[in-house]
Length: 299
Ligand code: MG
Ligand code: MG
Ligand code: MG
Image (cartoon, rainbow, N blue to C red):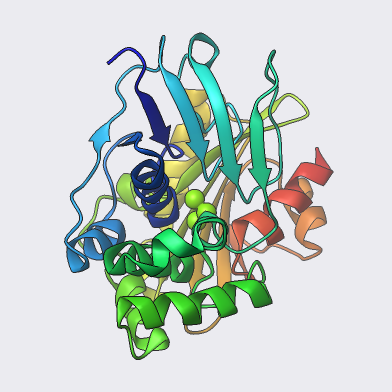
């Protein structure tokens, strides 16, 4: 057991991170694990293709790890320095230091699922469930190709995966996937903000950026004061320099940005004027492409 290799995705697991761990582990004979509970969207995708939920990593200490869909230490398991990282497969910017040479495969495509589907074409072609999972993850991360992170390769790969998985209508399947976690009305605001939340280190500053995707932005507007209270509270408690909550309307194709921190930095980063507490940015769909780089630059 000591020689087991664990494939693990980032904290606040999303569908791409969980599916990538499952698929890569299956191909390599490794063990897929998560960091924390999966969300409703991921549960929907796993259930649709009859694939069980992976176990939790627990502690990282002394374990051999493959990191998928992330590389930043802040998103990796705690005590990552006491684990042995053997490989990274990802589609995010690199912010990773490690004392030994390791295998790293990073491509600027819309999902880690896209990379795995390309690398292991033959294995995926023989496995309907695997193809279905990868398609769900790809459509989730690219917001059904609406996110600017989407590449031509993602679309080509998605069409191939849909054929293998027996999905006739990619768009409809994508909306079913997205809708699975879009209902925020009955959730505590903490769970809404932290469900897809990432910590970053920008020039030594701790910055947290959460995102939710809804099919009607009014669901978020109705809870704006709760969002603001939660962000301000969390900022004080956890020593964040800045917190941002990106509420994305996947139908209107834009996002309302809520934040706690320096207003001037926000206005500069997004080249806009912010009224009371939040601002709508048309066309903003991607934390990775449209939020992280501009915030990084202001620090
Ligand atoms: Mg992810
Ligand atoms: Mg991803
Ligand atoms: Mg994501």
